[in-house]
Amino acid sequence: MAKNYFNRYVWLIDTINRHGHISREEINRLWKRSSLNDTGEELYERTFHNHREAILNTFGIEIKCDRSLGYYIANSDDLEGDGIRQWLMESLSMNNLLNESSDMRDRILFEKIPSSQKWLPVIVNAMRDKKAVELTYQSFTRKEPSTFTAHPYCLKLFRQRWYMLARSEDYDKPRVYSLDRIIDAHQSRQGLKRPKSFDAKSFFDNYFGIIIGTNRKPCEILLKVDESQVKYFDSLPLHESQRKVEVTNEYSIYSYHFAPTFDFEQEVLSHSPFVEVISPEYFRDEIRADLQKALERYD
Image 1: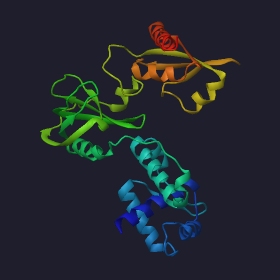
Image 2 (image 1 turned 90 degrees about the vertical axis):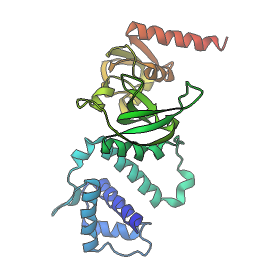
Image 3 (image 1 turned 90 degrees about the horizontal axis):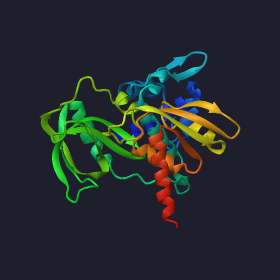
């Protein structure tokens, strides 16, 4: 029953959000057609308002009514600025869409995501309770797993993998740990040690992806992109700092500001031969060397 109500809440949020404004009558009509509604019953007035209250308490989403336009999400601007809730709602909406289209599952394909979600609750609860985490971790660079105490700073999703930024007892600075390489994790009795001034977004603004710990400083990066790829770069920017600084009929030049580490190097190479690094010179040289090594493999 609890799961059924949860799905109802997600359906109601998604329905109102997709329509912008929607009348009570239209909500009821759509509900009677929904695959979640096995009996085809109406969404009665009292039930509807109970759902509104539960949605506010559970998700922090406020559904209000405009007499002339109908029901709408009152705090949608707040949701857009809240990365966690926005990601959650997008995920729930997709889940709701799949439930509504269960007869089409063989025609909706997804990429396989490495199993890591099982450790998310452990780490989230530890951060909430201000506790460290006892971690058994198998690094790709070591033959044997190691067990240690980690103080989680934040979580980040990148390339369909979850990562934890944490400081362990063996290092002075925080390091990144991939959740799919965790063998075991449980909350420690030890209190969480994290700088009060730490800001996760500001910290990762200086990087592309999750590679950190290099001596490189943030700098301006210029990429020359062939016209055939410009629309892709415009529709899905590589980084929040992306700006278009020059436009011609044959190419556009984009500016970025962060430290060019291994993750960004791989990103640039994935767009070859349509992208050229203009600056900084040392990064341009690195890309050139990578391309030369690649060509040697085909000699």
